[in-house]
Length: 155
Ligand code: FES
Ligand code: FES
Image (cartoon, rainbow, N blue to C red):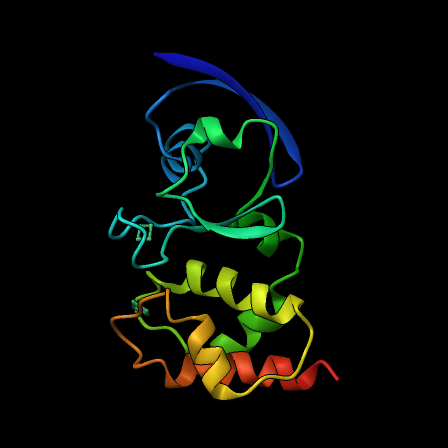
């Protein structure tokens, strides 16, 4: 069964018909061509599919597209184009906080969520916040370094 949905994705209103069972991340990737959000486990474990819905980060593989009807959805593409992630992207690049890059969009979305909370936090708290985002390559050290640098640099 299909449903009509209207939502705002990266600031642009879109209306589509979607299958009731289609997940948000698949809708973003396949119907809208926003392939920056990745699909890893499809079970809510790895965090590769992290997007922002009405200001909160969610697992795009656990939310149905129909549940996003009427919502504002922001993806890695939107946050990157708006330069919201510029500081984090620079820090990740300079500290080699990515290798294959598969986890990176979700990691940046999760890290930015933390940075928006705008308070100083410890490395342990950074690790706890990104514990739902798996990285198979880096060992996390450089990722935590990069996030810590941005948080400490925001005054
Ligand atoms: S693909 Fe969604 S959490 Fe892994
Ligand atoms: S850089 Fe490869 S999974 Fe994180």
